[in-house]
Image (cartoon, rainbow, N blue to C red; front, side, top):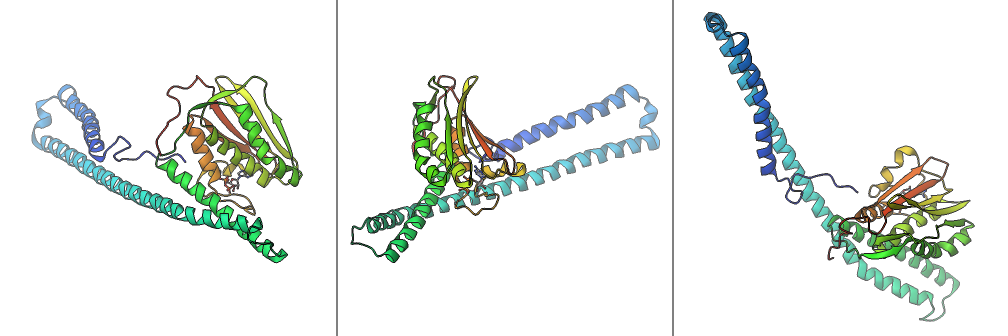
Length: 330
Ligand code: ADP
C-alpha cells in the first residue's frame, strides 16, 4: 500500500512552500525567453529602423502580447494547481475520516466478538451441557463465522494502525530457520488433511535478520495460508537462500496461479482475483507487504495462470541495515 506523496503538512511540502517554489520556477522559466528577446534585440537586429514606424509598433505589440500571454499562462497554471491542492486536501480529509471510521467500527466490534467467540467455544466444549448433533452443527457454524469476523476485524485494525504509522515493531534477532519451522508447524495438520505436501529447504547456517518476530511470522502465516487455501493438489515449498547482503524466502505452491496483469493488484487493499470461491478479505497481502517494507524488505510475487505461484520475501541480514526498524508507540 504505497501512499502517494501529498501536498500537505506532514509530507514536508506545504501548499505555501509549493507556491513559492512555483513562483521561483516560473520566474526562472521566464528569464530564458526574456534573455533570447534581449539578445535578438540588441545583438542581432539593433538598427534604429527596427524601432521606427510600423516595425516599432509591431515589435511593441509583440512584446505586450508575449508579456500578457506569460501572465495569463502563469495565472492559469496557478489556478489549476490551486484546485489540485484543494482537491488533494479534501481527499486526504475524506481518507482520514474513512480510516478513522473503519478503525472505530473495528474497535467497537472487537469486544462483543471476543465475548461471542468465547461463549461459542464454551458451548462447543460442552461447558453448558451436552449438545445434540443439530445443536453442535449450529454452534460450529457460529464458531466458524465469528472467528472469521474476528480475523477480519484484526486485519482492519492492522491496516488502520499501519496507515496511521502506529505499528509497534520489536527489534530482535530472528533466526529465519526457526521462524519458518514454527510457521510450517502451524500448517502441518491442515495440509495433511488436505492431502498436500510441504517441503522446507533451509540452509544449515543460521539466517539472522533484525526485526519483530511476531510480525514476520504474520507475514509467513499469510503466505502459507494463501498457498494452502488456493492449492487443491500437489503441495507447498518454502525455500530460504542467502542473496548477497540479504536473505530471500520463497513460498511456492502448485495452485491455480495468478494472471500476470493481476500480480500487482493482489497487493492492493480488498483486491481479490480469480474465482474468489475461497474465504478472504483481500487484506492479508497488503498488510504483509507493509510489514515487510517496515522491516526495509521487499515482498513480491511471480506467477502464471495454471502454473502455481511463488511469493518472495527479501530481508536484509542483521547488521546490514542502518537505523533498524521503526519502533513507534501504539
Ligand atoms: P485473501 O486471501 O484474504 O483474499 P490476500 O490479500 O491474502 O487476501 O490475497 C489477495 C488475493 O490474491 C486472493 O484473494 C487471491 O485472489 C490472490 N492470491 C494470493 N495468494 C495466492 C496464491 N498462493 N495462489 C493464488 N492466488 C493467490
